[in-house]
Image: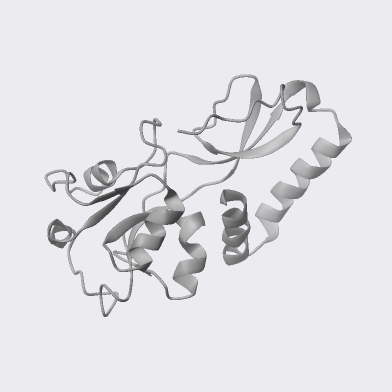
Length: 187
């Protein structure tokens, strides 16, 4: 698990972090939420409606993202399935990968079904490399993207300008452009 950058030691004024919004010594303001949903390759399923019910996931290889394993609030297959009413479906099987980008690549390669983070999967969905399964199920992650900064930097004109610009972009950009911007931040 990666250790968060120390803003004081590294002399960082402002940044964007993914998490629950609580970092000691930093002010955190929510920038954008993230949706979580299952995806797979068109190579694995010939049509997006191939899987008709959630129960059919029991017959599929699940790709597990361990990149934030143990991080409170990170959505796993077990938590996603429980939230959507499928708590009896076993999540022990499947492929386990400790890199979010590699999880999506495994899904693109047809190795199974992954839980995608909307910000990271947007380009692959738009390009047709991935298809979203069960689009009627909406699940917003308890984790989100936050603008974070040290309280002693709040009055710096450059911090205020950058912070204001980020929030203005969030308000004015179309959803697709904002998600693409978020994907750049996530990389």
